[in-house]
Image (cartoon, rainbow, N blue to C red):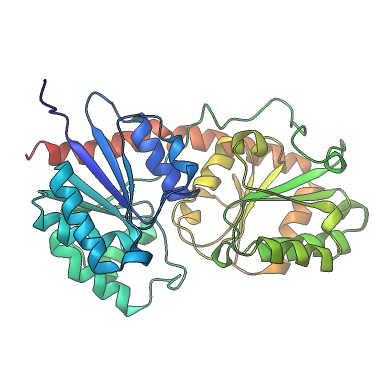
Amino acid sequence: MKQETRPLILHVIHHLRTGGLENGLVNLINHLPESRFRHAVACVEDFSDFRLRVTRSDTPVIALHRSRIGVWRLRQGIFHLCRQLRPTIVHSRNQSGLDALLPARLAGVRHCIHGEHGWDVRDLNGERIKPVLLRRMHSPLIDRYITVSSDLRNYLVQRVRIASERVTQIINGVDTEHFCPSSLRSRQFLPERFAGPDAMVIGTVGRIQAVKDQETLLRAFAKLVRDGAQTGSRARLVIVGDGPLRENLIRLADSLGVSALTWFPGSVSNVAEMLRTFDLFVLPSLAEGISNTLLEAMASGLPLVATATGGNLELVEDGVNGQLFVPGDVDALTRLLSRYLAEPAMLSAQGSNARAMAVRRFSLPTMLAGYQAVYEEFCDQR
């Protein structure tokens, strides 16, 4: 039997479920050269059928169930997994992935890479001292850090005190062939009441939880409809995604009197097609790294309205491909939505700019080249 010589990358993530980080990992596994790398995924918690998006049959996905077995048995599990698989690199992500580093080193793994992909919901501005100390404590175990945004890079360098040469920024990439505009906005996936020729469909995609703050968008939309008279009556809102606050939002839409103009389709498998039904994309998050859904909306030729926080500042050029507003500011968001309703030419111009920027700066091949360069650097050191 021929001995396997391709290096194995063991990816450690919290769970493999619907999400931006997870989508980026799937893209990485599916598109890096199969002839060059093997992959395995260890989930600190568990996985859903999202794992079926991994198209490579030689990629095992393992659930370790930390919340059920505790952190010490999790570390034992990582140790035994590393002894069994013999990865060349362990690539952990975010705070929960730090638990994999010491057992990986004890098991003989020569190289550890750690990625920071966004802010913890309990530490939206990176101000808590405990996460800083936790990262400093694990720093000697890490050969290279990867961040997706400048603010996360600055956090590692300035707060955690990681030497800048140990930190590589690789912005997420988007498949600009899969996510692309159509010549005409398709309404076939929308309810019939959304399909009018004069309707402007405002949409967002994401897990419905507190940090994503879809409530601010819903309240701004209700204010737009209430105060916008004839113009506001053209507006429709689509909130795609599932999560712990979905039912609360549905009830809020009813209490605000806009349930007939709002649609909550839940999680969808056809995100690219859904984006092509929108006229405008809104991301109201309280904190973000580099949002995959924002990139997908850009590639789909949609103007972007996003909060002025985190990686959004690197994706949205105010007045060029969209507009920024202060997180949680309902009135400011209402004014922006009203302006787009009144100026359809701005929708078209900014949407075209968004598409061009996605193709030029945020393509999937650019992201893949960045990760491959880092992996090759350490694989060559074996």
